[in-house]
Length: 272
Image (tube, rainbow, N blue to C red; front, side, top):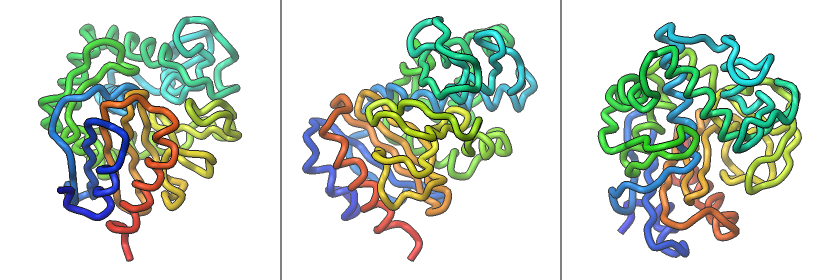
């Protein structure tokens, strides 16, 4: 049985496997579900972003290094503002003009950082993040935009790190704020948003509607969701984060259930 009323909600979800953890800066407050490795899909991006931020903190690259299409920088790539298409090298617009969600942008970014580090991006992720946080069961096998697998315990560890950063803390706090304010664009699964706010690797909730987080999540909430039915949000105002892995692809089933869970978590564990 789940150890909270909020997490008991997932027992009725139309999925075979679901694992959820709620954390604050002190650690895990509640959890449910098995500790099995599941694909994170685009929840990979916050982990990739943290690796890049750690590389910046180590002096391997900088946010303003040119990378990607002409006129684009590391900062643009992290913020989905480089102009690159979703899945290939087609340039859809000038850097800094639109929020174009791009897996390819994260791949180009990882290639750039790995070249500077004279190694593989997967090894860099291990050295700079996974080993530092003791996320021993999390593995990047493929695209740094979408191909991490790992258990909910490791995702909860990442959530706690983002809530109370120890790796490149100043940069991580900066990354959780809106980069290139005012850009419009499509939030995958939820349609056009104006503005479509993102930080450096993290989607920012702001006042978007509809949205996958709860109605009571603060506008400062940041995180990501993935096509494999996964999500991670961090609400710095509430001092809480929630990590979720499932074995069912994201779809209409998630639209009412994810926000309901998020609001229940905030009601149960938030500050009175």
